[in-house]
Length: 195
Image (tube, rainbow, N blue to C red; front, side, top):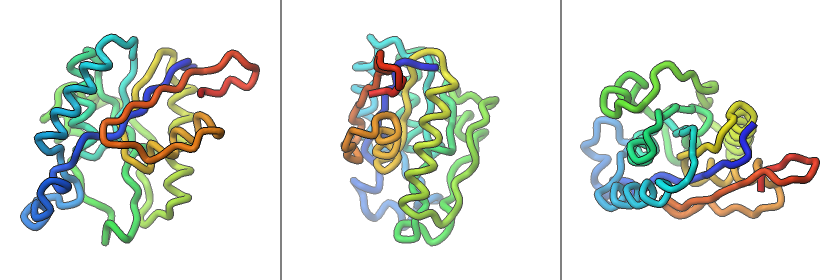
């Protein structure tokens, strides 16, 4: 069971910088990082270089994997793609389950992706906000219990909020700024919570 979990939201998205990007994109609901998003991810990796992170988990969406890639390179870690950390599957954003790159395709682009890691179940579509919060919360608890060393999770705004709430129910976690960083440590009390 880990004693430290780091949470970060992915860097800035291409479609946030270029709203017309989706009109010609092969996967309009799976944008990568913008140039400033890549710079945010580089800075995040530099900040984490001095930390003792042993495990790295990322949502399988491209922007999260790209962000994780910068950290994985800096810390010499594999990237575990975790579907339980995926974006909220809501009908206001998506008309169907969003198409994204497969694990194989991501591993071809980002060699640190661990093809052998098997994450949780795929999120269902559509998904309510509460279902997303429960999914992300269960994932946080599973990863915290399964890992022995400190871990980093790279995910999305709502999933970061859910993860933080699961790790410390007393925290009023915002969805987090792009590439924001949050650390939770297990307390010495008998409840074993991370906060």
